[in-house]
Length: 83
View 1 (cartoon, rainbow, N blue to C red):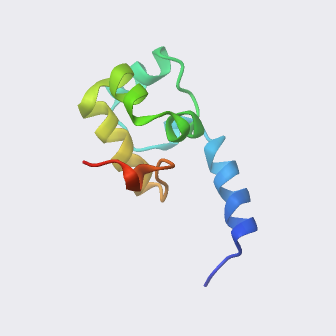
View 2 (view 1 turned 90 degrees about the vertical axis):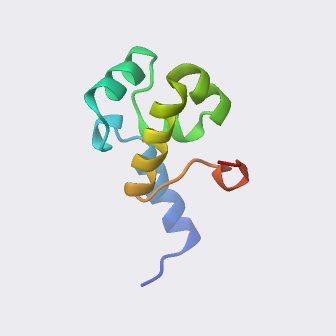
């Protein structure tokens, strides 16, 4: 099954509004992210990789990256970032 680009965009917009609690994260990562003001998936997805690294550290940033992939999403521009 395929969906149009317009439909995909709308679905992505809705998913970005979902709370980060929807992601499979450890309680420590979730608490740290919320303390720093990250409450919705879109805030994580749209944050520059360098900002996430500075805020959360490498391990938690990687945990978010894996959780987003598990959720069926990735950060914009993630393909350009070298692991």
